[in-house]
Structures are given as structure tokens and as C-alpha cells.
Image (cartoon, rainbow, N blue to C red; front, side):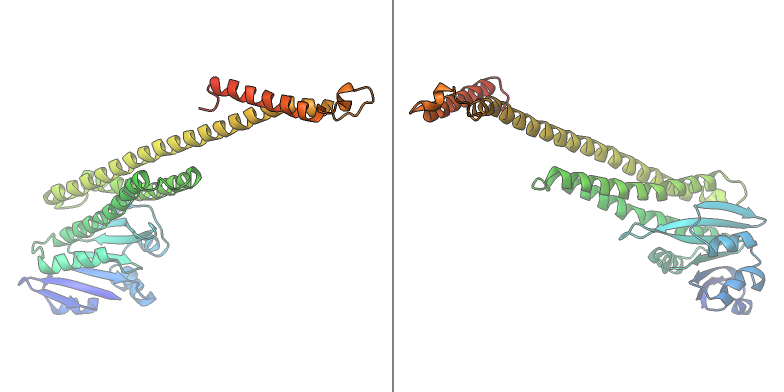
Length: 317
């Protein structure tokens, strides 16, 4: 499906569904959005209408490409990443910035694209470089969509620190690693986008970019803030991981110490029981009428004395 917003010389907005109808209007600039295009519509990107470089069309069809910017004569090709908040998976959005047009290509419907279209419709940029304004709007919407994901992870860390005291340490460690995995996915999306926007700010190949330098700088600042949020949260999860691993190790040491104390207490008792379990004939204690009770009493007194000694040394603290 192709959706076209065209701005005419008399400052009217025209909605079209076919590129051929552009010839019926005096168009200052237009935005053609290719959403899940058919093979016939994909052909329009090449020899059918726009004559884009085959490598750019290949990047559109065989994704997921890393965010990047390529220049082909007067056409600038951008690969952008959109993020799905539910799964944190990335989807590719491609932009072709031409002299008087913007072409966007994406396989899946994106609400960022819809919001950008609404902004252009409500407040169009009438100048000849309006296509650059539309491209900025799309990139800004894509970057803004990263923030809810980062904030959701921050909220999860806060709830993890304050509301999960009833869970055992192993469950907490599993959750910490899940959060770190989410942060890694977010970072793998944000950092390449930051590098792309930095390249846009530094390039001299895009005309009229100077007028939008502050706009793209604002996007770059947002991406820097996102990277700082991700890195800060990764440090927090590292501290949480080390904390709970220390607790787990300390708990294991306490268990081993308790088992060791119990073993040491039973060692002399086992020794006494072993001696009187040999059943030699010449063992006078075996003929005592109260021998059984005397040995049990000695074993009980010995166990109590050893327990008191260990407790006095603080082994049960």
C-alpha cells in the first residue's frame, strides 16, 4: 500500500494513493509511504518510478540492517530501527530523502509513522525542504518511542528492590538477569541510532540540513540520555546481582557451617556407639545392668557440652 501526502504550490495538502497522480498537481514536495508494498509497488522504487540504487532496495527487502546513512547523488538513504515495547524486538524503517520528496518503507504498521503523518498534516512545513522536516519528524517519533521501554525497565528495577522481599534469592537472581537482557536489547538499538544521528549532524551532503541542525541535535540529546539511562540501570543491576550472589554465598556458608557443627557433635557419639557395637566378649561394660543408660547419658552430656562450646564461640550467629 502506498500513501502519499503532497504539498502543492498554493499550500494545499493532497492525499493520493498513486504516484502517477502527482502530475495532476503543482507539487512543492511530497511524502510517499510504502507500507507492506506488493512486488509491483516495490518495482516503483527502482526502474518503475524513483530509480533508487539497487543496493538500497536490497537493504529494504532483506532486513534487518544496522542503522546507517548512505548517499547516492541527490538521494540520501537512511536505515532506522523501531522498537516493539512488548517484545523489545526491532523493526526496520527505511527513508529515502530526495530533493523534493520523502519515501518511507516499512513492512509492519508503525504508530510512529502515523503520528508523524498527523503532525505533517496538522502543521505542514511549506518550504522546499519540507521533506527534510518530515524525515526529522519520523526519526523523532521513533526515538521518543524508546523512552517508555526504558522507563518500564526502571520501574521494574524499582519494584524489584522494594516489593519482592518474599521471593527467594535464586528467583531474584533470575529476574536480575532477565532485566539485564532487556537492557542489552535496548542498548543494541539505541547506540547504533545515536551513531546514525551523529553522522547526520556531521554530514555536509544533505542540503538545507543547517536549518535543522538544532532539531537533530535535540534527537541526539535524547539518545544520549537514553544511553545514560541504560548504562545507569546496568550498573544498578550489576550491584543487585553481586549483592544477591553474595547473599547466596553467605547463605551457603551458613548452611555448611551448621552441617559441620552437627557432624562434629555426632562424631564422638558415633565413636562411642561404634566401640560398644563391636560385641567383644571381654567388654565389662556390656554386663552392667545400667550400662546402656550410662552410655546414653554420657553421650547426651557430651553433645550438650559441645553444643554449648560452639555456641559460646559464636558458630551459630
